[in-house]
Length: 466
Ligand code: IDC
Image 1: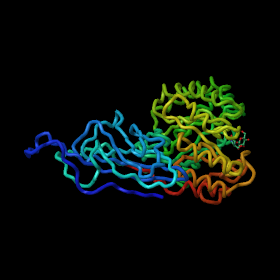
Image 2: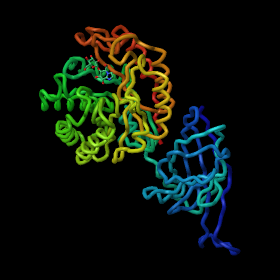
Image 3: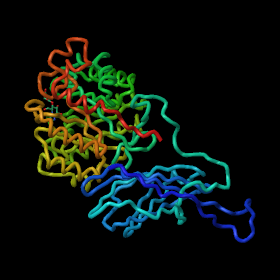
Image 4: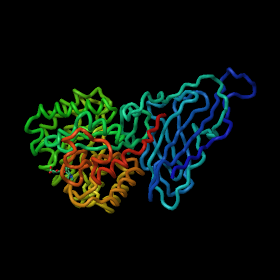
């Protein structure tokens, strides 16, 4: 799957100067190298990373061109440049913030594309009209500044990836490279707070090697509405405990019943104004504004989102925000709709992702097909899934869970499993009674579901660092 071709070789073109050799005159060395990698590919679609290196003199304003050899290939969504396509010819022009490229500067671009027939790599890369032959053309200056950020300073997920942002349909790290985060969700804080302590958070960070921790704060059922300040400080404490371990924290406003998030609009504004002002300077916080809208139109959810997001932005302008989708965050599928209602009428905000939830024993091929299709068009985040039926109990479905996680890995979609708790239900990762003791590590404390999910989450991350 992972292919890397490089349009590279030695030489570059020297243009500008005429007959007399006067190196200090107007001669501008031009040269470039492109490393093109298909980072994932699925039926009908693919994602590519395009790393452009300026080997010539510094440029201010640039345009990268290339051609797809197969006319069925299309760029559907690109990032870090303005992307256009005419026939099989693709152009990526600089955006404001990466207009200037020093000699040796590298700029990371990428896109999600579609293909029919075949998916060969593009050819004939050009920078400002000059073919990228790559290699070692000595530039006429000795400047070798680069636009890439320094190497990572630590080993935890937050130290490596830093402040996250949405780039195209992906979640990107501080190097503007797509990443996938994998982690666990609490159960309802009103019932299971005894499960969240230093020992269990240590286990999540070290034994599980997780990247993120979702803090599910129910609003009803004995949750936030009964004690706003108490639940707010409980959430803040858990954000700090995640931060201390280098884990990302998803602050989940866990609306469920009633399904219309507007029922809790005023509570949401109060809660998010408070947690965003308290945590806005942190790099590890992601906000999830409504867990699972249900029985309510997309228009109503969008209206809610467009009122709550600005409240968060005022205090925390750069955080990623997750927006729940219709029908228990199924992109509408569980109420007979689909992702097109969002694509046609997206939330008017930037740096947001849409959530998709599934329960593997209940939601199978048609839901997977929706996610495969939607992933090329919308930034998706699986902020909750279960290995069992949608009740949170019933049969553990390993085969369907594996199919889901393989798909999410391929699409680099982040995921969070329900639940990191010892609830007496098959979706819980720990056996009943575990949270009454002090041990959360090892296999003895795990349920069948927990053992499998831990085996998936604890495999090494491959976070790009440049
Ligand atoms: C379930 C819990 C269960 C609790 C119930 C009602 O597992 O113990 O009694 O909520 O609050 C969701 C929800 C999540 C559900 C879960 C399983 O986000 O709150 O938790 N589920 O039913 N969506 C689909 C499934």
